[in-house]
Every structure is written in structure tokens, then in C-alpha cells.
Length: 252
Length: 212
Image 1 (cartoon, each protein chain N blue to C red):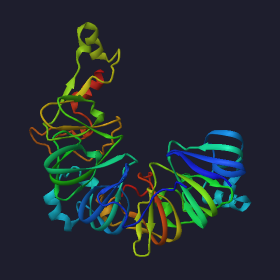
Image 2: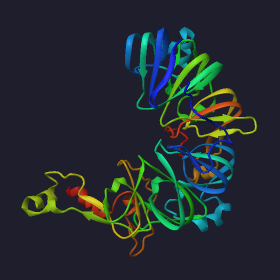
Image 3: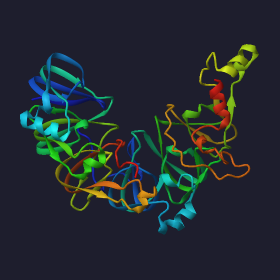
Image 4: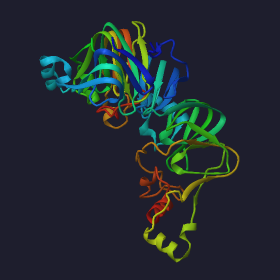
């Protein structure tokens, strides 16, 4: 008889994976969670939206992204909390006086000792400080070191290295026919003309598939001179790569 | 007596020696030996059950598999969990029930508001008796033991099944903040109290209350 393992409130792992697809948080205090990622819990835990009044102090210290506030909640209390996301692989990571930038949809939860800020790359958030966070990926996470060019959809995040830049293979645009192709889109493209390029020292996190979490359009960054993705009409670019990529898609 | 075993995490193998099991319609992927497959109308609960299922909308499309040999079942690459019942009742969502041994009775019960929040209707399927059953889920199921000292709360979208002497209670934390779009995302929960096992999956079905 190969029945599954039975967990109770005491035998559930403390801040560790239950299996590859679920993570158990031993909650004693406060954690930030992305909405809807809790699947079950033991104990006495309450969930409040970021806008909940008594949380003002905590939010002021640890949550600096009005853009994502609608997607996040604070869990507080004591107990064991199970997190999972669409049967994707779930892993926890520890940051020690570090910084890590991650696609906003991949981040499931983080300890309140970390502080979340919006990355200047649209659709990504940065965690700064010391503490634990939980992230989901479709397939296992692979750690690679720059210099590297990665497919935008396979990118989960990066730590301790400078933000990436867009890289375009424009070889296919050469000559008269290439120009025609770029102008009209006739002739097609391999779909791999555009990458993110990383240089410098650090770690890049990749997932082994190209399925990304759906981004929720939740408004734009503040309209101000020099703010990437800011300004009027920029709200649609959240999960995307900015106007340049849209131009490339049109021409590709 | 039908023997259930996991071929790997996603395929159920059932060894049959002339007896029968009931499986989700169309879930057979291969078999060795001689098998016959017969569609059972109305979930195989008999005439009264058939009418109940039609009325409650807890549709259970099942077939009876009978023969000698080994039959393999799978459903949409879902992960399979085995449940052994000993004069016990398993409550399960019809869509998550893959296969039940011939000796088990299936039926329908009223669950109250929980079903409504799941978009699965107000009713759930029960499996009673002694024997083995197999569940299918999106991601490997996690089995949680509930004791009187440690009640459990489960997100309706992640709930698969439960057994034992459990009371379930639907909790709603909908406040004016939910309506403003500043809800907790976990406004709907099922609370289990008593003594028993609860099966959850590491993913959430699309539910009516899932986003609030």
C-alpha cells in the first residue's frame, strides 16, 4: 500500500517544502503573500489587504509598490500556512543583506524583514534586505552567471547584478529583403530575435519553460520625467518589454 | 478484489481478477488482459441516484470496467492519490474522482455554501464502504490530519476531498474592503473541525470567489 504521507499541524515542515509544489510557512508574526496563493492553514491566522489601516506601519517599512498593492495581502498570526501556485515548482530562497529582482507574478510570499520595491524594469519587483522569500517557477529554477543572454519568457529574476538590457539580433534585417521583412513582417521570424542581456557579476535565475504568470494590469507607474514605463498610456506595458519590443513584434 | 497501485505519480494501475471497478468515463489509457467497458448512466448510483445527480448537477460520468488483467487509468496528466476506506465515507468533488473499487457505493450529498463558492454546485459526491478509491488532482495531493485541537482552514479552490468525522463550515470574510477591491484574496474558506483527513491540491481551480 503506497498511500500518501499524512501531515498534521505538528508534522508539517517549518519553513520548508512539503513537496516540490507546495511550501509550508511556520508563521509567527507577519508575512506578505500574493493573493490567492494560500491553499490551507492550521492555527490562528488572519489575512488583510495592504490598505488595512493597522498595517500602515508595516507597509510603510516593507512594501513600496502602490502598483502591486492590490495583489498582496498580509498574513498575521500563528500557525502553519501552505502556499502553492497552479502546481508550479515552489522554492524558498534566503537573502542576506542582498537584493533580488523577480518577475512580480513569480513571487508568492516574503518575510516582513525584507522590503519590496518596484523594479525600474516594468513587471518586475526587487526585494532588498535579509530574510526568506518563496517563489514559483514553471519547471525547476536554474542558476546561471553572466555574461548571458536569456529568453524573456524563461527569465525568473536576477540577484546582485546590474539590470539587463534588451538585445536584438538584427542580422535578419540586412539588405533589401531584410528591410522589406522588417517593414512588412512578411517572411516571418524565428521568435528568438530578442533577448535580455546580462553582464557583470551576479546570478540569473531561469525557469525551464517559457510559461509566464499572467500579469495583471494594475495601473501605471507615476507619470514623471525619466520614469521608465511612466507617463500617460504606459499602463499596458507592464508584462511586456516596452515599446521597442512591441515594435519588434510588429515587424517580426 | 481489485488491487489499486500507482504506476507512477500520474497513472493508476488496477489489477482485476474478474471483478469490477468504476472509473471516470474515458480515463482508460491502456490495459492488459480482457476488459469490458460499460458506460453507467447517472453515475452508477441506480435510478434514484440518477435522478438526484440530474437534479443536483453533480454530474459523474462513469464507466464500469470488468475483466481479468491490469487496466491503466489517467486523466489529463493529473496526479493520482490512493485512498483506502474502511467502513468510512469519503466526500470528494466529482471532477476529482478517478476510480472506485466495485464494493464502494457512490452518492450525492448537500454541502451548503461551499459548493457555491467553488462553482461546482451545491452538492458533492460521497464514496462509502470498504475498498480503495483513486483521486486525481492538479499537482500531487497533500493529506492533512485534522484533530479536535487543530482545526484546518482550506481554500475552496484547493479542496479535493475529506474523510472521517469532520464538520465543515463555510466561512466568508467579505467586508466592504472586498467590494473596494482591497480584499484579502482569501475571503472564502472552508473550516474543518473534528477528526479526519483532508486532501488538498497545490493549485486552485477557477472559482467564483477566488479573486476576492
